[in-house]
Image (cartoon, rainbow, N blue to C red):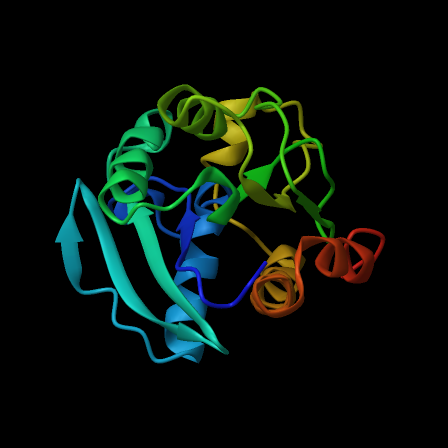
Amino acid sequence: MPPDKTKLIAGLGNPGRKYARTRHNVGFMVVDALAKQYDIELNKKKFDAHFGRGRIGDTDIILVKPMSYMNLSGQPVQQFANFFKIKQGDILVIHDDIDLELRILKIKSKGGHGGHNGVRSLIESLGGGNFIRFRIGVGRSGFGAGVSDHVLGKFEGDELNVLEHIIEQTVEAVTLVLGKGTKEGMNSFNNKRI
């Protein structure tokens, strides 16, 4: 990926205090961490999203947190992509994944939605799935809780310590992908246990 193109980095989640720090909002947490690390203010509002512009290394980036709720995440991202003329391959999406255990981060260059409603909305709105994904494992409930109860539940106990490492590692992974490309990111992070 040449560094002269603007990249759009979208973290998926749900707005509001009720959903803060839940498993489903780990995408928001990573975008907040990127904003903090690279001194980017997420204080602008457009297309039903909070966003900020800045640079990571040599790359101009737009950080986006859709405020439309998870199931409708695609529309704000698509509106940003159209407005700033950003192609699907220059969109990076950060989201939770129940099919990966906690401590696992997996980078994919494209694919389907895997049952994730936020990713499904993105594919429908963008007209395809050729965007880069950072899938953050949140695992499944060990107590028989339903999927929605699990992903809308907050990280607890030992998970909180792991969460901080996961967020740090995902920030590193995003930075690496921006600087050296998706393949380099996949080679460095896809088989690594955090």
